[in-house]
Image 1 (cartoon, rainbow, N blue to C red):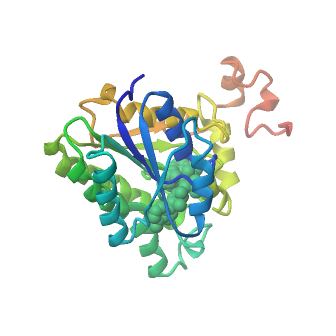
Image 2: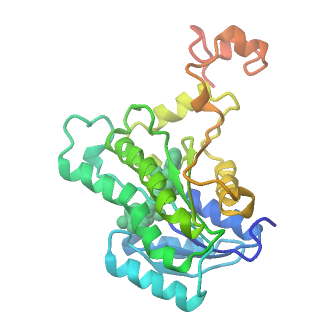
Length: 282
Ligand SMILES: NC(=O)c1ccc[n+]([C@@H]2O[C@H](COP(=O)([O-])OP(=O)(O)OC[C@H]3O[C@@H](n4cnc5c(N)ncnc54)[C@H](O)[C@@H]3O)[C@@H](O)[C@H]2O)c1
């Protein structure tokens, strides 16, 4: 059990579909003690999900944009555990007018809201937890590859680029305390947040066509396991890193040609390959 004895704070659970739920479930299976956070209207939903973990857990209050909540979180974790060994930042939000193909018209306020909740918040959470963390501890955030521009992702994509940078600065500033900071760059997964992005299915379809290992938008297990690994001692010496858990999508520039895909067995019948003129719809 790679997380035996570790005390982990997991943010970002709304439902059983949330990536963070699967991370919490895997972390418990690997021996970790877990606490969740939530806030406002969705807190009830998080509490329901918390009861469905292998070991039901408590939910602490955290709106990551509220200083009072961050201070309260530090105090509560100190009271309960006296220290923290790891944390998952699985928090993102962008107003509807900053997504879905509205890049050119989104107001500055919406872009800034996306930045604050989705990128600056990694620093805010890290600052709240750092006083409780020591050598060997780690923080993991969730990224969507921000090295290129995507359809529909718009200002959330810009916020993810900022998140990538924030994680490197945190690695710089928290490294001397022995705290590691890394990101998992995941392929598209069918969660509440993702389905709320108009055109999500378009991105999902790209992945299904192009990821060399294939990609199942309904299966976050590989992402959850990589989060656990990064929070474990097996990732000692790794900080400021972005691990792509995306079926290998980031490494290839285009979908396989029908002939190549057929040869490698990916699509036994060339007519099944993406982009084939007579591709059969399944
Ligand atoms: N689903 C995907 O396709 C995908 C792919 C790559 C990265 N990610 C990232 O994974 C992370 C988790 O998202 P998810 O897809 O599991 O969706 P989700 O909707 O289940 O989780 C998003 C979480 O962010 C929380 N949140 C929003 N504003 C907050 C605030 N002010 N304070 C505290 N929490 C707040 C929500 O309560 C929710 O729990 C996000 O960072 C997302 O960008 C998702």
